[in-house]
Image 1 (tube, rainbow, N blue to C red):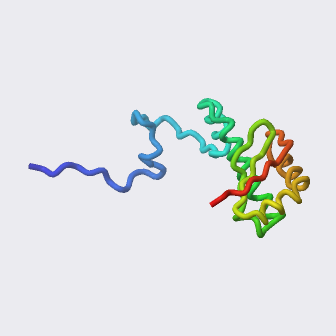
Image 2 (spheres, rainbow, N blue to C red):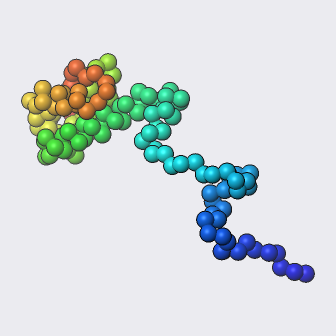
Length: 129
């Protein structure tokens, strides 16, 4: 009995089995690579997740804004909801909530500039632990 043949590790230059089409046709060229960031909006639209994607973008923008403008509050507040032009900010401490409220005009302008969603109000709440 002869042992089964194993595919050789070598091969002609550029012969990459991972790049071949699923049906084994070597004549098909691999598709060019696309950035995930370019594909995500279309996929979100197809699955009806546009609002969630925009909310995730706004939350990331909020984190960046707070980190730049109020570094001490960066880990102590987060955007938890964005609906109807109202951004809900949850804070861990009353002092952080007070700072966010005092700087609302500045933070609101920065959030408006960073998101596609029109934001007209920040609602700040302290999380009770």
